[in-house]
Length: 419
Image (cartoon, rainbow, N blue to C red):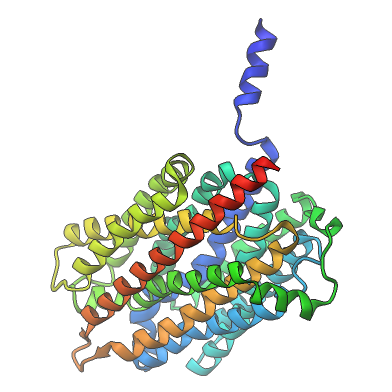
């Protein structure tokens, strides 16, 4: 009887111990990569002042990472399915850490811009390799949960990374957060090299060995192309609002630089709690349904947030929490949904092109945001409401695109079950 009870518990267990380890490692990996990108947003107010740059120049620093990551993703896509994913992951992660060290040592705007390009070349591919590993190792029925935990790194970077990064920047200068990321990344890279098993089953599938042909076939396949267009629209919202969030909070909403870590800390804590819940819900009620709920919430909050004036700290925190819950719901649900689009032999290439599309779209969005927003001599940002309307429009169009993609995915899954 006792043995039977143990067997039932094992059968009910959703993930094996090794799968739990993979989820944890990929989550920490994403944490360092996302933190490296996100830390520029709260550092924006410091960098604009210390390096004597304009909002458009700062937008270029953000977009430089995105563009280099996008180009790198495209160049890598043709080769992405020809190597053990673990080796590919380690190669790009070592390059990412090197680029972050370059950022930590950059003394001028020009060198920081160059450092962001180097970091983007390597960092932009890491997410696509991670998602390919998730698709290889986890069934569609539980990918919402997996994405919920992995995307939780987005929130964790706020709870742990951004407040610590801001405090380090306030005390030791803006280079300090990059030193922190490089140090943590080095330790994580050693763990991945030692503990992660090879991920190479895809090497036994019928893959086109001509890298250019494989890339061209991936880009031109109609259902893949629709997914890439949906990703373009998905990237627009986050990349437009994110770079100027700290400057808007300080100069328009009346938040001090010392209060900013509190905003990110509390927002991140709530996002960590809701991330796994959102992932589980997306597996239960449907990933597209969860995406629609997150989109509706995000549209309402973006409309409110971008029209704010001077705001009490507690009100801003409340609005930020609700906004980020909506945005993270969209991210988790759409990421899980898009993993079902590619065939097994195309996963690496698809994820690389998709990540590249996201980065390039985000880079364009950052530049457009820098052109829309104007900073007055007092530091206040104007035309933030116009930016909000642009983001809302992109969210609506993305929902329409995902609706049609979801219909195709459901037909594909139904056909696969009946084969």
